[in-house]
Length: 458
Ligand code: AMP
Ligand code: ZN
Image (cartoon, rainbow, N blue to C red; front, side):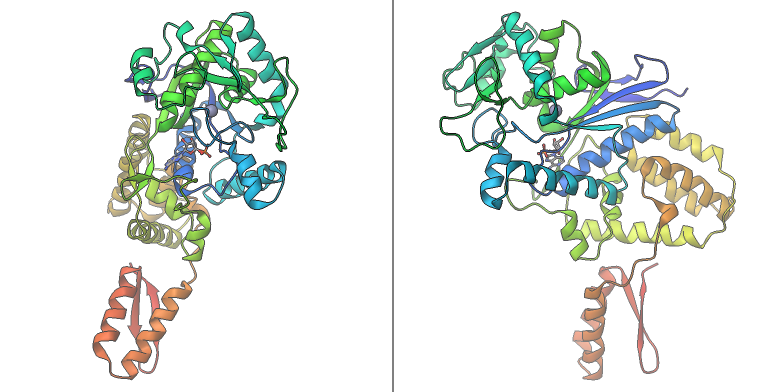
């Protein structure tokens, strides 16, 4: 089996992947919080998850992939203050928290499907494992890690010598950096494992527990679900980069304190998609979703192509221009390949090259570059190019085999019509500028005797 190297957050090194069980990977990804439409930043994280997973499959591994669905307990601040995101959304949308969770879970699955993201082996909702979460808190309680405050049961982080090892910060610096409302916590880094429902609570989601009626702390579900389905330790845990100092640090604290074993061997974190230097966030309201792409007649797979262009450890700076350019490149590739004959032979020289690049910390920009090198290689027959690139696409997931030529978007048709009118009125400057605008959006106008045609740029 070929070697795979990954940048492991916990060791801060690029390391060879060594599985716990031969040829198998236990893979856990933090899933979405289902209170709003996932934005394209969230989806970048899930595209990268998918490519990482497909890389293992390409290399012959059997992957067991578990993903939680956060439908309770994630507060508006990751650091245990504010409202539960679902309970807050329910007030705005005038639906029950259960209905909100169901609606946005379905949306997440639909978006994943549109982006050709393979479903995990199993999705597990936080609310489906409340009993197990209570059991974990009981274990922690018995071992003396838990104390009570006015609003819930908290984990005493000062009881763990290596708390903060994931981010590389010791407790002292984490304490100093924490911007947390201390309330009556012992340490700023202490986190809730069980929150009490407020008096006269209007919550839809609450349960009885030995400590009082309430709901689990957000980090608990991932500790419980990963251990239940993948055991402990398991191979790989993934998530967005902001999870390092709080969510994943606290998952590790709970799981390792409860069971006295390492939680996971490899921690992989994906950098954010940003807009104008700011992280895209669901709560800020300026987020872009796949629906917005559809309104502009952009195939969601253009976002997948755009994602491939930047390594997962770097910010992906989003702009509509860069997405349009990615869409043009994606169409050019899909279009061209669809004109080649089938039944070609896979070129092993290029497959090996691709394999070594993708196994080197999932280097998707170089993988894309290899595709274009193949396209330009005059020594390879077209049908062999097609077979080779389709094989590579098992990892990149652009779904090139199913590529369909896009219909001309309505905005382009409208611009072309305006240009035709301008031309008829002899408004040459206007007509010329419109032609340029249409070209920048990926289309060329060809004028015939008494009409025009629109074709996609080559
Ligand atoms: P959430 O639904 O808020 O729990 O987030 C789902 C996933 O998206 C998590 O793994 C986050 O780390 C990730 N995420 C959140 N914002 C961004 C962003 N701007 N770019 C990339 N990933 C993000
Ligand atoms: Zn998690």
